[in-house]
Image (cartoon, rainbow, N blue to C red; front, side, top):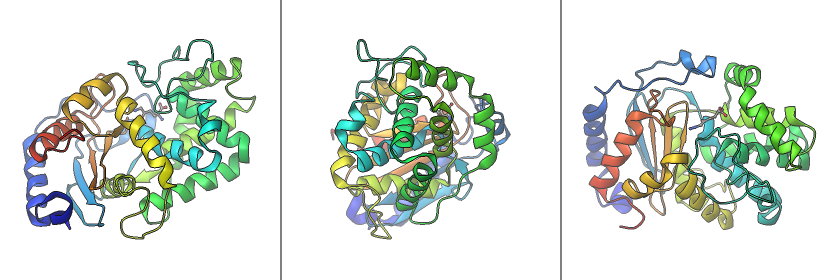
Length: 316
Ligand code: DON
């Protein structure tokens, strides 16, 4: 099946992943995110690489069964949920599709005139999407839909880390400030607590690198999970998600990423990056030490090498 997706056997793919792991495991530069107290407690040197084909074959090396939280890697999936539930027009009224060239937690990033957040991959946009979901169906139902959505992509029941959720709810003053700004401009209503609770709940969904690769593979497979065959998202919206991952998924590094790696992808401050090779595979790397832009140091190295060695850019 790797044969079908990549023209190489699973054994040679596994061997290649091991080479990548060996090549970059010695790099212990970067710093684990500690602005969320719970995240500072993770095993700092953990390192996993995984790939899942659209036929459902998985290869993985390193700490591929270690659990971590999705953090911002949840944003494309939550955006997809909103599109699926409410349609493009309702979602586009609240959040745009332009890259910002700014950090993920930028406070001033709202579109001139309409005051929409620029895109759903930055915190402001993701919070606006969560507010929209809560205002449409209520917090409890939105959480339930978020869980069902995650199950579709994971192919198993979804779990979340309550301590990470609580930690962010207590310490996330910057996101609360962003929510108040959105409230000021009528992008969201009064219920800031519900919007932030859903946002953090999505960020605290627990996955392994194997899981994250299968989430990417589900997007690569037009929204259908490769092994369960269940649809996680309407196929009409997969293009929306992948386009925004491509242009905005790595915030102020998005241009460099598009230029060097050339794949739709999304990073999270837990140290994960999920990448999508449309029609072929989902890729995931987990390594918690981050660079100054908030991206996993080793994940960037791995994706750069992987894309070059396997000609993965969507423009190849
Ligand atoms: O909003 C936050 O601070 C986090 N829960 C998510 C941020 C994040 O992962 C940014 N990613 N690169």
